[in-house]
Length: 239
Image 1 (cartoon, rainbow, N blue to C red):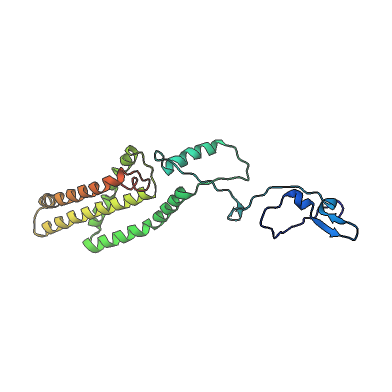
Image 2: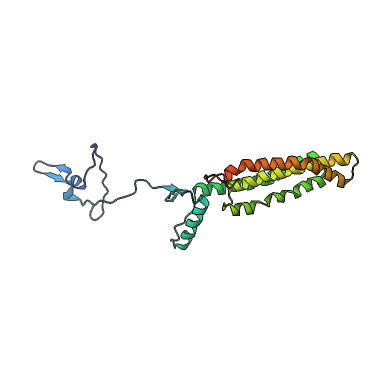
């Protein structure tokens, strides 16, 4: 073969590991006068290689796993690591991305946002079916932004990040606000149908429905308080 190296693969039936010296002394050819050993016709070198080559999307990849303590959430740890990685200068062929909870949260947010227009269309359809009026439907929809009043201050005061469960909590708040608006408008419609002035109908509806609405809201808050102060990292953003 001249100077061209030829790879040779050995396989042994022995259970114990074979040392490089033992491989060099392995008999390669036996004649009548002598035994030709592998070391006589070859040069043995020991090179270490990874036992597993991990690939993702047909690209060589390396995964790093880490656990965070109770003082850090996954989002906070991701933010700290991201800032440090952005300061490092990697070759152009190297790129990094986050997986785990961060990636799953982003994927879940995209899925929710993708179906949000369909949910809005279904909501408008049910409101039109209930009231039969675009005016009343518009009034209900105008109350939807009111559900966002406490979201930003709540997340800021609790030092929670905006993620999948926070978005899910916003959708739940939208449902509560829409439900309350439907109840009040329904009572107003019944009062005006009896011939009462609109001002009187509004006062009557609020006097009849404000107490049940407040009690329902307070019981919801009381049920979410344990989740807001739990040590788990999953439910506090939702609460």
